Length: 190
Image (cartoon, rainbow, N blue to C red; front, side):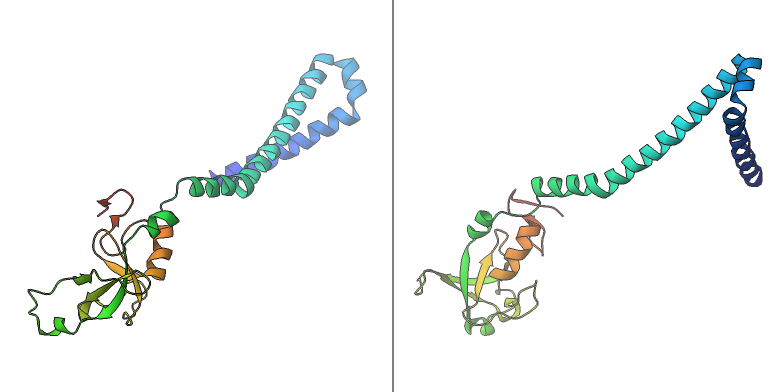
């Protein structure tokens, strides 16, 4: 069947070229001897030429749509429907300054919590201090331990991260990297 299809295509192309040559070269004689056959042949050839031009035009339109229009529409859509949080949403998160907590070493594992104390006394720049378990004093985004005085954002789900790390993450995706809590809708995706 595949060979027959190829042979049919080749024979049809040759027949089309012969017909086109026949109309162009012998047009006057054919028009005088058999005008209906001449005009029927002209109509079929005109239809073929129109169909070829239409196919080339559609290929150009599809190429233009795929290469030019669709990326522009996709970019506009992604800008309009953003999954990330705005700068105001990120700035409204509670901000803390990390400090080492030496008292957590003596606690039992049952009594240890993610956030041990958020001291209410303010430091010089009005940021509360946060003392964490040594086991929980690591940013899960950049995988580095918190240094004394590092600024942390705490999400509503009580997970904490470096301010710079979580800000970059939340601009792209407004969910907690650990538990998928959505800070904009206040729900968990998982």
